[in-house]
Amino acid sequence: MDVLLRVAPEVRLSSSTSGLRASLEGKGTRRETGVGSRPASGESGHTAGEHLTLTDLEARARQAQESGDLPALRSIEETLRSLHLENHPLRRRPEPPDAGGLPAKERAMLQRAAFQAALPRVSVFKRAARNQARAVAETEADNFARALDVAQVVIAQHRAATVDDQWSALAEHDHCAVIAELDAEFAAAGCGCTCIDAGWDAETSRGYVTVVTRYPDIDIVAERGPGFSSSGRPMLRRRTRAERNSRYLSGLASFALAAARRSISVAVAADDVHLVVVRRSGEGLEPIYVGSLSREAITLRPALADPVPLLLGSAVRPLQFDGPAHDLVAVTPHDDTTDIVRRCVAALDAEALDVRALDVQALDVQALDVQALDVQALDVQALDVQALDAEALDAEALESDVIAGEDFEHWEAHGIRPRRLQRD
Image (cartoon, rainbow, N blue to C red; front, top):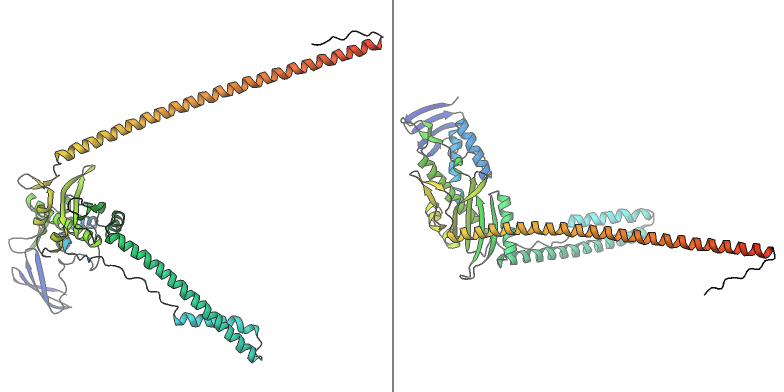
């Protein structure tokens, strides 16, 4: 049976079957010590080593708010504001695969199989023949093992060449290789990011990658959060709009810095990360951050420093805040950008019209083709009729010739010899 003893407003002693434990609770922090102590529930809301995506954190935040789970809410908020503290080691040149030979155990199995296949053919009483068969089987097994060793060496060399080519493309900042590697990394991490461009800046000769990522809206920060009553008792209290916006901005800064760190860990030749953060707005998306983070700013900053100043300072377009509570709104587009987007939309509309015109032309061409086919069919029918008429005329001519021949024979039979008509 657990026994809880309150010593002071922020100090408690608890006794359980696992031992005696003292806890010190402050605003936003909780520490425990003592015999049988365990990590505070507020410090680990999920299993150690478990990877949670932003979607999972958002769903757990809603569940924790509905159930009033203070430790879970505290853990989720701490996770959101500490995403940039995750370790992302720099991608290194991979080691070529080992081209080891056939293990001794497999060699022995090959020899045993060869012996079992060769010895039954020789009588048990012929020792010389059996010894000779044994030697032949051993030679065959050894030759087969050597062939396997050569095959494994060839396969290992092929794999090593493939790995070297992939690493060379990544180290030389080939845009196809960089985009493929980053998208594979983002997909494995489930962080909601995608790489849309990579290359070299013509003016500064610095390598860059352009990453677009999605961050949840303000609902990821609960309207009620863990707090303390006037007597120091933990409770859920309603937050002000300004408090929610402050926590939302902190989570956004931590998320943006984590995405940039993950990007430069994979794109080893990239010097700058152009980052665009969007969030859902109605049925579409709106940009809330457009900035550029350099490798120096990411790697040389203190690990425990607040990422919010870095986010504000690296924004190419200043972040837009509205109202006294500083609500984060969509970034105001640049006039040139707006004009470019307008032209693109007009070009797409014109292209759609052109496509429709092409479709109409195709239909007209098909109609003309059908008409031509009909005309050809009529011509063929006319030719067939003419051929039939010619055949009929030929048949009539043959019949007249036959009749004339019969009359001539009839006249000759009666002794009358008519004069044949002389044809021209």
